[in-house]
Image (cartoon, rainbow, N blue to C red; front, side, top):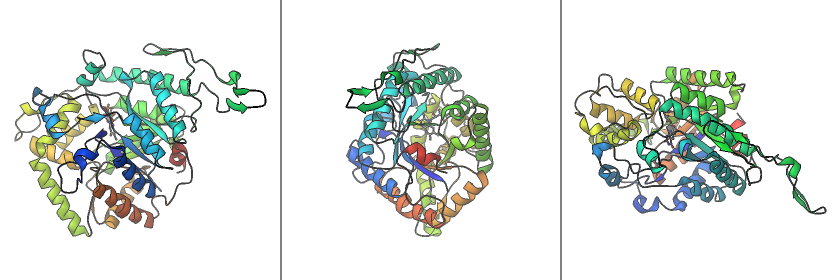
Length: 433
Ligand SMILES: Cc1cc2nc3c(=O)[nH]c(=O)nc-3n(C[C@H](O)[C@H](O)[C@H](O)COP(=O)(O)O)c2cc1C
């Protein structure tokens, strides 16, 4: 069996707006109820978790102005996902809720405290997606002149998680004794300072939060570069990837992450590698192919929207390039692996065509009826030996229902995904298979 997660790729932002099936997406996106509805559908379908992307800036890379971002609601507005985890968590009972934290901008004590609090509030289903962020504007919002160099920020992130996990471990699991007869709430011999003194971060500890029901919240991460994979392999319960180029590259990615995990003394089964998918479903294969063709046509027309996003994670102004020429040579201090994939995908294409393709594909185009797509996923799973998939489709009631009530029943009929939850805690469900 494999695991399923849903990646809310625009974070706590505008999900689906101005499209035929967006509903009241232009106003509803800011209400907790929308995500609660979706999470309940995902829980019915046995998803391991729902994960919110995050960033903290109004970008201005494309055309040197904020206008394109504000007009198209790309990257902005974006609300803080951490409070949303509590709302979704208390409205569900089994699905995990994962929020993103950018390590360069949060002190590990603050993150340890927030996520241990949420984990306690919702009975052990919280997860933290650790990113090192990629954008100068975000860095400037936290007082830096420019963002820290790519590999250096991963070096800092190792120390950050070391501090975070020590803080989470400062209270023994049995430290809260509730001994009413002797008037002892928590046993002082089971709670310690951590006295963490690193090169970048220090914290005395202990945390002033009781132990997390899971021991510690689950850690997720999606580095694609060598240093990014090293970070994920060392610390993460879930490593996520949108590696392009088909099963061969997916397998190489997974093997690499698991080999690195073993070097850090971990069992390969402790790390779940999940790949992003964005299926196009239809009543029949023909209908799905027709929808995919229309999506391609739409993506080509709206190629500029993709360039607007590509400008954010590379920090390069794509408005200055001719869309009918190939992608020029670019360098970035942003997402290294995505930029490398973009160069690979751009071979033999104009920038316009590349932008359109980049919008549609994740690991492979998955197109067909629910049973056909279930078969395609089964084939990938058997070839790559991965641990599951992270749905990254546009979030609206139609797409969620297509996956949770169309694709998932087809996956279940093939015995590929769970029919119910065995455990109460996110990490236990992740480690089940
Ligand atoms: C599933 C997934 C989720 C991600 N979530 C975020 C996010 O919320 N915020 C962010 O700044 N970057 C996010 N990223 C980017 C990664 O953290 C990472 O920077 C990117 O995959 C490039 O890898 P590299 O940093 O090793 O070059 C995400 C990537 C993937 C594939």
